[in-house]
Length: 392
Image (cartoon, rainbow, N blue to C red; front, side, top):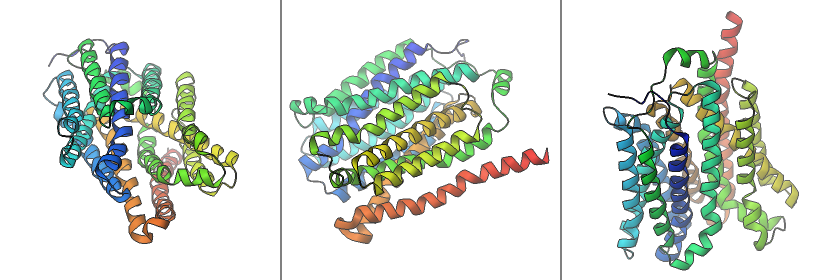
């Protein structure tokens, strides 16, 4: 198996990242609009589809490494992007079939789950320490605006028809596929000595801790999405400004990711995870309990900061400890898929327990219960690491 002696070109990796992120963002932004408008999906039906998509994403990402074993990762990446394109075209080819839409959605997330671990391996393999952190920083400030862009242009895309978002997604995926031509067949080798020197003694413990925090951050996102319109209305934010205010957390996430790219003191520190945990929980509480618009906006900003801290640190520890392997990226993406699955699952449980009118409150209560469970998983590695330090 021949491997590239040098790390993959960042320009090529980031080109794939940008176009694939636009495709993914447009697909997710338009999918549930289409299911509700064209097929009359209820809130529970949309949540059920979201649960299935999250579960498929988690499983496919978890086994992405096995898929790449014995194969050229660039070939796996090209195949997954081609399958993504076909999945996005499927609802357009059979517009009257809800089955075609659901199959396309599940096939699309499965292919996407196989895409990102390979991209993350090309991004980090052969890079260590500060160089890896910088590459991840450029990756983060590429995909975040790319996934937000569809939210801005979706009203214009909607003029193309209800399937316009799928057409744009397919076109962006084709561009991502073309960008893979700039990648070598295999990611660069990850030198063992350089990797050991760059991985701090507590990185494995930090990784175990943040592996609880990462999926929970996405559960919070799924919890906030359905209740945020009501919360904005309750504090007097009009419909004109609602979408702008609701996206405040995305802007803050971007700024935090940008700041972490340009600074160096956050890695290897338990304080970063403590700040991320406090921001996620505090942001959720402020959004849900706010009595005024400024407090609610502050809550969104705090939550966005927690999302940024959690994502960047989790990806870095995953790829540093995992030596830039596709398996490491697959585990990272599987945890995100778990959050995508559990979040809407709590929404379904909220509807079942309290009915449609009080489903939001019940979902929030269930989210807080899950937070208590996740907190134990976050704290245990820290306590074990502290005990080990004392014993040394």
